View 1 (tube, helix red, strand yellow):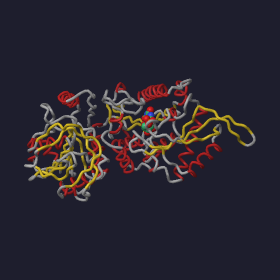
View 2: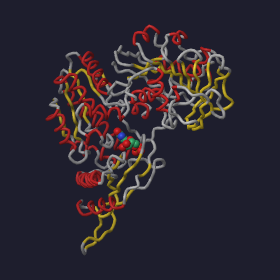
View 3: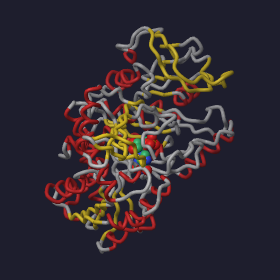
View 4: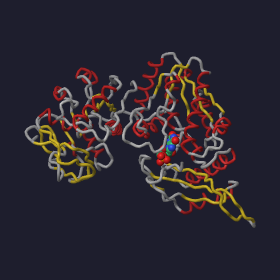
Length: 551
Ligand code: XMP
């Protein structure tokens, strides 16, 4: 599989109607050409009309153990025939089908005999082409709504009579009864789910791919299994095989550099590359002195002893600390850490003369959340995320084998590739590392203090069996001294805050209701074992309005 995808920024808020459509086409014109390789596996194709959740549809289908890829909406019929998919899904999108230049499909697509499921814009297009009208609604419908079944169908097997679905649309289907049977409706939408009277062609006004649609996954499972007849034999190992084959053919006998961060994404990339090209892989690990306890040793152990890669560990601790001297502003810290990282990395990369490619562990949500391709409306809250972290001026061709995947798919890949549970389920750790958790000015002794406190938090969470229930937890060292009493003496020492959050997507988060006995053990141990800390506090703020990290 060649790595492909494109990111459409959301159109600016003020754009309406035809302008919206032009935006869509501009974005399409900018798009990469996508190559999808023919396969003998059961395949579902998602034709992408630019919806924000199109890639999520593909992921939900892969969850059913059926291989699924996102492709351009205008993929030729010949190519579709060649790929021989078991089913086609037409995604949602920002345009309106009645606009002159809105994206269309060749109507002969519906003659191929392949089952089709149109979602939102995909439904509108299907109805417009096969008999029905699409009109602008008097107002947009956005959010949860109750949807009821009007007629049983294999697509709806196992769904209750009434369930919650997620709507996000302005346009409505009307007068489609001649060609379509109504399967579901809501109080405001007569054609919430439809089926063509003669062909295995379905449409949904709501979005089954988002978790707010209670039975959305079941519905998609019914489509691929019952309607398309897929058996669900695809495994994540097939994806690894595809990536390995694609990397081999792209890289040939050239050398690839992979930057390791100690986290799961870059480790999975390195493990795939190692499987694909073995000794042609060189890994660079920059020890910036902002890592957690034991991290550097673990990387060495994994990639030098276990995978036996050509591992370059660069000890840049002093350089980072020097550059960060006197700096307390969080964004400035991030900028300095980012710049120094690139400089150190570049220098090391130059010492590997035959390197041609650079591999990165960019995931699909990184691309979306960072607004990487966009001057979109989403405000940048923190200058973070690693997309494009290493600038193109480094002069390498990029390899991003995880760019279409979601985190849990990457975790499954990691386990399959032989990475340890501990690494695969590791909580996310920000690029600037302890640099943004050691508040105020950084120094080697303060970082050491934080490292010890953080290790205690992790240890206690694992012992209590809570590590996997919490999505992210860590210690923060505050630049505040408070008074305490130890033995007979007065102390005046620093404070450690403990942060633990529950979250689905890290965009919003709740503080984790930590059992008191665990808090007690963490607090006692930190105060007893970490010199220079006499107080521990627990962070009970949600995101928003707080953020997960303190800086
Ligand atoms: P916030 O603090 O924005 O964090 O609620 C959301 C997620 O992003 C991680 N994060 C970062 N990751 N570089 C990174 O690579 C950064 O500068 C950075 N800042 C925050 C944070 O750990 C959480 O998982």
